[in-house]
Image 1 (cartoon, helix red, strand yellow):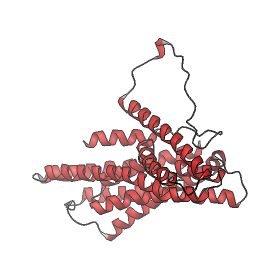
Image 2 (spheres, rainbow, N blue to C red; image 1 turned 60 degrees about the horizontal axis):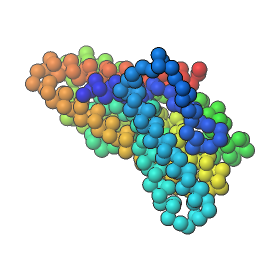
Image 3 (tube, rainbow, N blue to C red; image 1 turned 120 degrees about the vertical axis):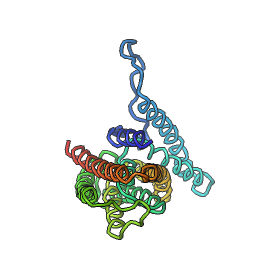
Length: 303
């Protein structure tokens, strides 16, 4: 179970997102050539097929959201606003299923460290809230400074946020790795049923804020499109709804990782030696994955 989660999360966290289109913030992206030689057609990996299906659903919902937004522009008092917000929530759920670092960090942390169900829910949603908030601040900054308000101007500034966020993630990952190494050499690792210490809750909050500093492209697209249609109020209403949808997906990942960790440690509790080794392996692997994610984000922001 844990191996499957790690493979899925690592693949999701390292695949690059496809670029936006100039014609519309909700553009479906460049389409591949319809003609392919039979020699180049190869069976697709399972994860690739899943992500392609998610991307297809995202594109279909984006097109519907675009249509609803134009209807709201013509009739703001109609019931289309509620349908727009409902689809925005679904879009947030699907957007979080695609490539991204949020799921990877949530999964890695709760494999590395013990936590509670409430902490998993709070951590997952705080990351998405900050993710959306940083995009909102960036788009408003572009508008207030009189800069171009399009996806390309957004992407030019996004790299700085990503590099700073990556450095913070690396620092917190290093701290978690230090704690994991210290517990590995200690006489007895702490029980997984103990409540996390306040300082560890602090690292949880710091990691969620650091990871959320990277602006959310989906949030930026909605805001930029609402600016273009002069219905900014609708874009602002959509931001917490989008964050809630993304938080829903991230929370499922966090709860799965937390439950897998607890189950595995429960199975090994009868053997003190096996329990120590399992605890140490989870703590070290989770911390190293966070370091790897921070390094990947830093390199991606520089090149």
